[in-house]
Image (cartoon, rainbow, N blue to C red):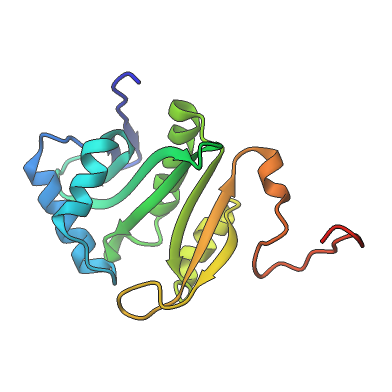
Length: 188
């Protein structure tokens, strides 16, 4: 795949690709995630994502600043040799910038680039069952709850696995959670 980069201006904000050569960006991302996510991550987690899929890490800052206000970290790879799966690993926005549509823009950008660059069949993520804002955001894009994982996080919280079926045929699964579905007799 050719080197893929994003650099977009939206109002007073700049959305752009992570620069693997920038120690400052790595430090800022690490601090932002440590301060705002309940799950602790080591430097090895960042290296895993940043060195294999740097094109799927998108940052946001004010046009006139290098201070990172938000980040989304993703990856793409084959799933069970059957389909190409995108994965959203982390999404964080500085608290004072929340409610401005930044997370929505980062998720949209990630979905679009995974589809464009790697032709994903589906996109998956996990989020805490108690994180109503995250659930609302992802379900707005069409993500479906597929599994509840008990005590998934180190803090003891449960998680939902959510999947966005990009191919129409993948949306026909029966096992989505919190949905009432009329299933014809003999199908199950």
